Length: 283
Image 1: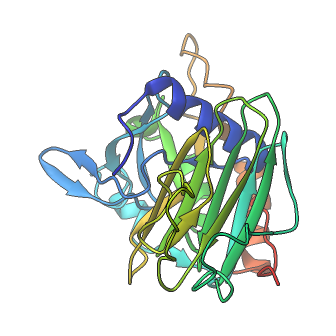
Image 2: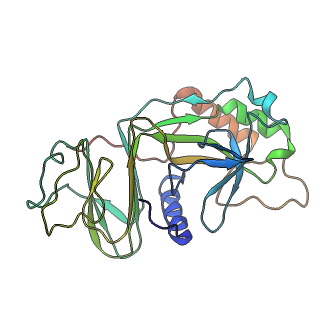
Image 3: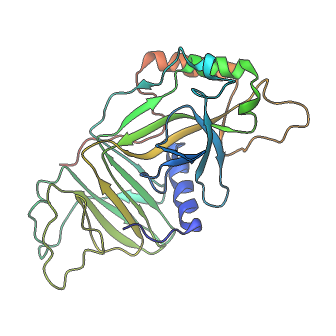
């Protein structure tokens, strides 16, 4: 079960992941967005604002349904990137080390684990996000260029989700600010833990975690209905008028020139996934 919601913890986790990847993180990757009584998962094209205390995205509408933008967006449906085997994002004050398990822990399931990781944390807080079989869905660059030129009122002062990463399985860890070594693995079956050996509350849903002092959240599903990461930009051109409030400097700003560059990048690869560290599955 998810730990009681703590705004300061969610904001810290989101900031650490953003600094490491340039992407925004979801504190609760399974959470649906509530708009006008409807509940839907996060999708590219959603726009809204970010709660400054929690870092949570609050959806107002979608460019695919809003009356001002639907006609512009209709020819450009979101594009799907290639599925990856494994990705992780690690904050700068955390390092990876070789995976070793205590002999007292039953290795059934862990020896054959599809993902085995070990992380060294220092006294400053750190964060790790691990995703199994992630895939991106993103807004075509040409659509962003057209929106940047359109000057529509509905996007003024709003943040636009341009890319969403989904996966069927994830694990996230936020350290408590103490020096520790934390092991995280994705197992086919939950290993048995002998009496006296603590799993730190990290066993279940296919993920195993060693003893830890921080917040460990994880989930596993047959389908990719978790959304741990997303990219968000603020369109800036005709939308900015004299006297308008400045755009949040923590968000990327798109001008027609920058959109054109991103569009060219999109045509070179089906998965523009800038900043998210990819790696091979551990031995």
